[in-house]
Image 1 (cartoon, helix red, strand yellow):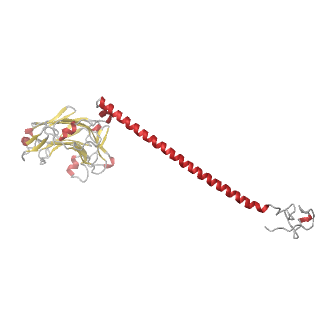
Image 2 (image 1 turned 135 degrees about the horizontal axis):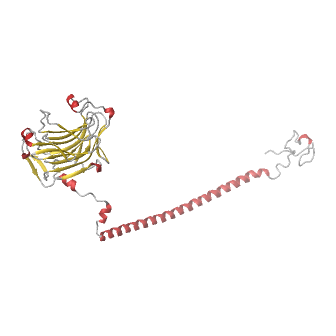
Length: 369
């Protein structure tokens, strides 16, 4: 799919959940914050990378970023085609004064004499603007508005190694100095990575891509890999439609966009629904209160009935207990004032009994109970 337009991707407003039609995370998980997209190597072989799902056929790519620190750590901006044409910015974490510019044509790696390093002030501490202007006749690398390198078409092996087929954009970081990589790669990266000194983070604030074509799709017309063989078709791509679609309106914005008549009708309908619901709730509450009152009366009646039965039972029990203490059952007993009886029924210590009045006289027979 073609980009077919110019667009600024502001990663400071990115959430990571933006339509995956536009970007694809090919490795790891970048972090998104107030400074932009963070690509971090925190452990062995971490290589977080994002890649555009759109292509551009000549044009301009402008990236504002801060490279990662760390020996053996490579921060990169890569433009690459399906035919392995490639344009690079690469930053060695241990090199605090220069950035590498490079290019490839059709994946030709028979020589490695195309890389040229250019000075840049504190690339790991400060954000800089790294721009590529790519046309069919020349290629230019620009740092903070200053052109540092120009490659003419004919200077790239007579044009055979000149990047000229539709490319996508890749932003990411990788530990080129990991011991698992070839020695040549480790040396190029500045030496082996010391993971214990990490994490190492590359931060990209934004990427602005301008496609020189306005087509919807690009296709290879033959196997030559020349720019003349590329077929451009359509007027607006799916990507462009996604990027230019108006943002979703909030409910308030949609309501305010209605006519006054429609708004009044909606308000009246809502008010009617609220009134009906209020009436239903009121009726339910009244019915519930009445039902509750009836249930309370039933419970009160049951309680009074149970209470009356309990009182009657207690009265009956008291009558049964009290019947054994009436009719003079205890009055004939020869008890002295200490409550004792001798063997003959006389009060102890010769004291007169309470009812007989004699010290040692006979007393009435004790009734068994």
